[in-house]
Amino acid sequence: MSTIVLVFYFIIGTAVGSFLNVWSRRLLRGQFPTGRSRCEHCKHVLGFFDLIPLLSFAALRGRCRYCKKPFSWQYPIVEAGTGLLFAALASSQLPTTDYRLLIILAFISLLVASSALIAIFITDISAQAIFDQTLWIAGVAAFFYRLFLKEFNLNELLPDLFTAFLVFLFFLSVRLITKKKGLGEGDPPLGFAAALLVGFPYALVELFLAFVGGGAAATVLVLSGKNKLKDRIAFGPFLVPAVFATIFFGEQIWNWYLGVLGL
Ligand SMILES: [Zn+2]
Image 1: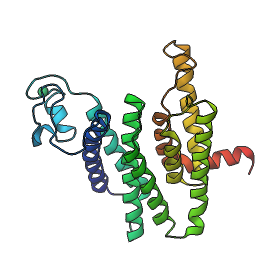
Image 2 (image 1 turned 60 degrees about the vertical axis):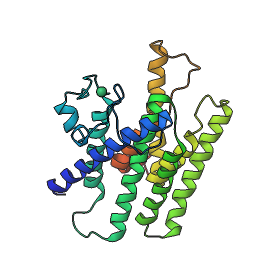
Image 3 (image 1 turned 180 degrees about the vertical axis):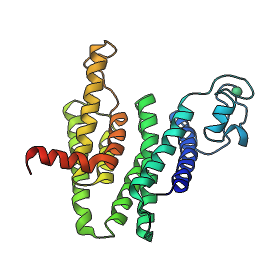
């Protein structure tokens, strides 16, 4: 993968990250996703030079040009994070030659699903809320990603769909058994989309990583006295990073596990 292609995807990623910041904050406030961007403090309409991903934040030293109040660090973190993620996905998923249409379509679907997952991560970590539109986009894009990847071979797609459906049922039962305290309303459909995106058998790696991460964080929060045992912590902020870790390292982790079992 040439450096210029990686830089290209990094820049596209920062622009998408900039949109995801605005979209997720508007979802949380119940606003329509379009319309001019404004400073959250003084409501001044932000111009083109206030909205360039990363560069505007750096040039303005993280402050509004008009009222000088600080912008949230969420903006540059999500912009840089999405940029790095897009570049890493391009480097791990795209071939250096042999650009066939199906590979391009699969990669675009993967970027769309990843973007929706980042929006879910933001709204879930900041307000324990997952919105239907982000779930639908993640699920439908994940479906098309597998469909293009498997070149429309439905027999190969079925194990992925079946696994995703089992994860959905599993999350739904955890939610019912714990009387809606263990998982939120958005977690079963999120589990479906996340499992479908990585497919069988890597969805197992993904769940393992998410539960280990979530369990470790819950233990730390309870031991440090910040949470009580009965407090719910959002699961999306653990599942979404687990999806990306699985995309990049799922195969190695799965093979290591099979090796441990002696298979
Ligand atoms: Zn301002």
